Amino acid sequence: MYGSNQTIQLDIFSITSGRNGQIQPLVPMDEDTINFVLQNGGNDKNLRIKIVSEFAKNKTDKEIALFLKTHYKGGNGFLINNKNICAYYSKDGIHLSNTNTARYNPQEIISWERAVATIKNLLNKGIYASQIEIDKSLDFEIKTLAEKLCYLNRDLNESYNELYLTSLNTPNVYGFPEQMEIIINRLEDVSYRKKIRIEYNAFLNDYQQNHSILRFHYHKLNNIKSRLADLEIPRKNYTSKIKYINPYSGFITDDEIELTLNRGSGVRNGKKRIYNFFSETHSLKEQISFLKNEYGIGGCTCALMYENGMNEMHDGKGVKYTKINDESIQLSWSKVATIINRLIIENKYNINERN
Image 1 (cartoon, rainbow, N blue to C red):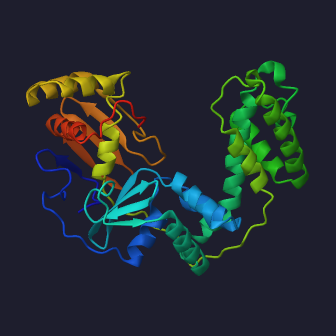
Image 2: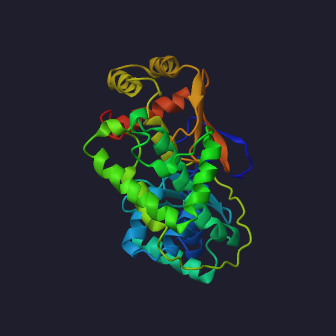
Image 3: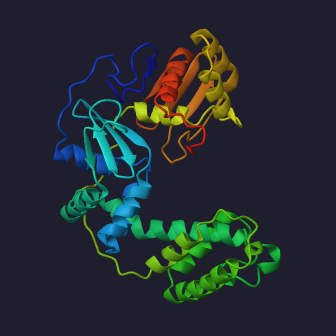
């Protein structure tokens, strides 16, 4: 049973079939299943809190749909009433299936507009998020903003420290957690928020002309500006009938496995080398030997680059994936080679694509 924390061995069966090697009959998605996916999916342990914040601001359905589209990431496998439900989050909506893959041939697609309407209804009924999550949504929003502001403040070039964002300075405080706690407390004050918005707009205008103001340039500056403005929006108060939402039991989907393999070996130009080798004529034995050498022994956390993404480990036996709430999966190198061959044949292993 999924959720038993066992490792599933995948070797000779088709990755598009059920875990037991049998094709599972399609079952229509009911309302409870869709609600469950919206409540538990997305691969971000704080996603419900973030979603509550967005709805509380009374933003337009279009704005919230865009938010959902960018915050539900990757895929999820759920065990709901002893049925496998696979979800893949795409540009056009949430792809759902009761097999192990939903990306390309979904049984049903829940548009982001429908997702907005469904979540809004659940929130109004008090059955989307727990009361604890609702109560902490604004505090979480302030904490997230404070963290971004502190990182930004620390990335100012030294010569600009006294020219920009001076309200973020914390004299004689050097530790990041201590600085962040001070900024969190300051952001509770309306007059401080007004002051920092004025400073931030001045910084942003000058930065557009002079990038040397910052040492690093990874910050999402317009997002920070929007977050500062959002703190002034009156909030709708929600209440919940839910005290606590239990962790779900699930499984790692075939879509997620394909996404991780599409990243390549994790070594510079590894995907290109794999693509070139597999595009040549080689036996399966030779392909296996090549993959063992290319991947080596190692791994990475958050293999899919989002918060609750899979962890990956590879060695002489193959590749092992683990994920919170899901059973781990062991792929033999033979199976990995088979999947990569199929992805190349189906033009789904594009070396020019950013994965």
